[in-house]
Image 1 (cartoon, one colour):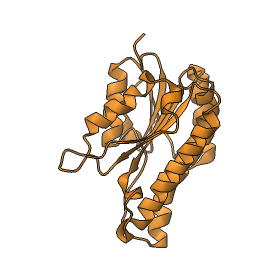
Image 2 (cartoon, rainbow, N blue to C red):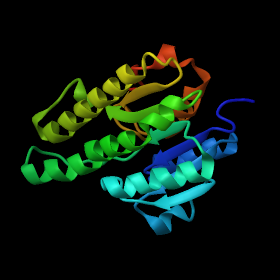
Image 3 (tube, rainbow, N blue to C red):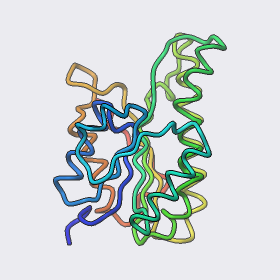
Length: 213
């Protein structure tokens, strides 16, 4: 069986441009795609096996989602967390807006699915971070801070999984996603996300993979 065929993979942020592409690619390669978004109408046009509208910053809602997914499939092999957002600046209001989307959703989702992923024969967690972590500016202070915190959270998950040798948590770093100069092609990023199941967990667990142009 070629990877990721047959894997149960949750894609959050599934109605975003990258999320749609990732769902389509995984679906074409035989994965069982569980597409998740807050945009219920938008999910109707997303490739996948199951579709769930869920507020991923709501712990009780995500626990319920985890229970449903477990009931349907009995396991989870991947969580590709593609939820995010962008707002410039350093104000408190903007920080709160970004924090709920970038960090809280990541924490809530990994807490709900970490045990399932750890017990999989090839559990994978991945996020898309930013090179703004490496070169922060005042204009992106909130965004850079929260992306850095997200990477730390993923590394902490990786440490938790390091003794099991079957699960891996990975961060991808890009400057921007698109087809313009200095950006990373969404198709390249989607391919890299789908390829996570081709590498042994111990070789990629805790990795920060730069795809910056």
